[in-house]
Length: 163
Image (cartoon, rainbow, N blue to C red; front, side, top):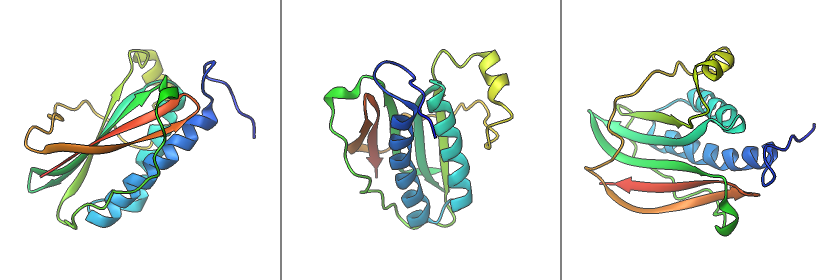
């Protein structure tokens, strides 16, 4: 296995290390809430990693919805100059058990994810991504807490919201 340098400050291995921590959180969200299958988690993680490695990922917003109401949320924002932050361990990701709920995953892209990039990646993505008009401001929830996942200079900063 070879490592390809994406920039001078992080590699694809750094991205993989950080996405593994995101994967641990998403698996815990899905397992504790009962709102998403582990197979679907795998599909989302695959796409997030692919987009991140290509430099197209800006953020990922994960929300637990129950009867149309937000219960919990976490937003992961990409930081490619994260040398100044310390990486936390995955955890603190147990969400309420709501098997009649659902996990909504909304991805935001960088400007580099243009029409040609979309076409080039379309056959490799597992999730049928569509344009989202959902409000991800989480105005009905209280913010607080979070974590940072870093490898090299690549990181994801997690912000948390809850009722």
